[in-house]
Length: 256
Image 1 (cartoon, helix red, strand yellow):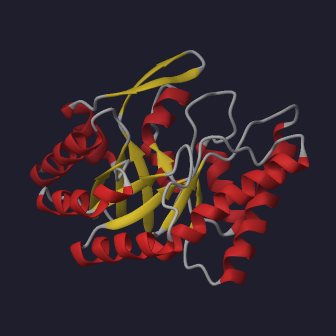
Image 2 (tube, rainbow, N blue to C red; image 1 turned 30 degrees about the horizontal axis):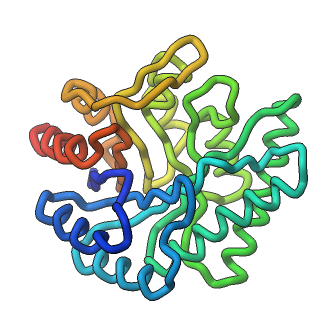
Image 3 (cartoon, rainbow, N blue to C red; image 1 turned 90 degrees about the horizontal axis):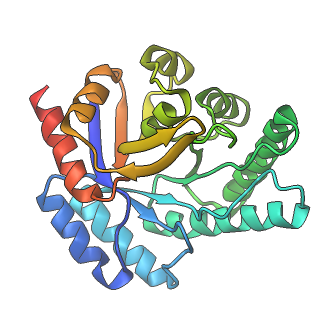
């Protein structure tokens, strides 16, 4: 099993290369660029330059699309705007050499099966567009942590099967949503050789996720002992201390 650990967040454009160099010195081999509020890399030459530096340092980049998206909006214009935002991430991500764009699929609305079909249709449309544009980047719907939001691990696995998209398994979200992590079930749902995952400490209640918190050492130990041994994997930490926690995850992994 080969695991790359890294933080959610690269920092501002002016600091990106210096941050990547610091990550590399710390043994960090992945980073998810947080376009969570907007695509903040505005110039193509900056995207290319940052991507080149990451490649030189052996750091795998991915992108997190803006939070304000919903592929199951009742309004077609909002669904189209969601696709545009995600595709904007794909364009910049492709320039950076990023492996994938992680995104929140949307909300259930009134009919869960209809939500699945609408979200599936949106993903198929976006995959077609990335291929048409020649962008070598994958789309990765994320498993979600609130019970009333689309994105159970079963739903994400079904999207992968029916669209050919990639995926992001957020183990903290699985815990918050299901109050338990059934590793054997997850292994059976995702037979793919490469896994992209998120992990952090999490605060949750009856309705699921409330907030991310610092990741405890024993939480890293439980996760890493239960992961499949035959995968290539990226684990992005989304705690309030993502760099520090990623280093600890790597150190725990090194002692297993």
